[in-house]
Image (cartoon, rainbow, N blue to C red):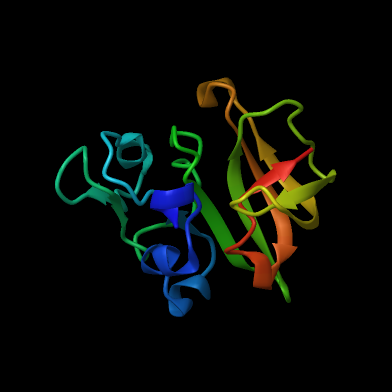
Length: 160
């Protein structure tokens, strides 16, 4: 449970997951920010205005799944590393997860890395399919890995 150990449970995650019909359309963000804290860089990062704060800066962000294009510009702007973009339409049986990566070394496209779950436990080996690390991201790379579709909501970090 997030409140007790800092790890989001499936029950806590369920309300922020896109509906199956939206997942079928392609890439979409998942915002795993479940606490009311003063933070809103994701709101200004979103070019389609899909992210809003219902009650102001100290509320949890709300994502309009239909307005989200899955561009991923919000990922590197989240100081809590709580935004991911998933794409269930990658290839049959496989999906992608895009995530922040602030550790060195930064992986390279094509590299095999170790996938970790929210608790830091090893899930398995995955392949890096994209790395974006421009100076504007302030040393927060956005890494996209190819994962088994069944693990798309479980894999949340990598170890190089």
